[in-house]
Length: 129
Image (tube, rainbow, N blue to C red):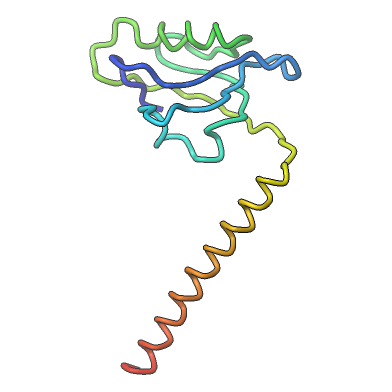
């Protein structure tokens, strides 16, 4: 990740008592690192380790420690961004009925989109060979 030195990261962290690791609960909509993290890891992930030139390799034990490590990594930076590795481990979640419905709706939209693209390609091939 490339962390902006002069901005907040917009990460909501919490201590996960089950895993004993800090958990990324969610990223703010305007988080400057949101595009650098795959969507499936925007929430419900434990932070296994953090690594930067300034802090080295650290396995944080709490959300508070994560905040301190990010601040320490940015400290004294001479550039606009600081490079940091962060291993996020997705936690298993039980899917509620609303999430299942969303998934089915999303799948239906994707299938419809691909079907229309396929049909357009077939029409093009018929017309132009």
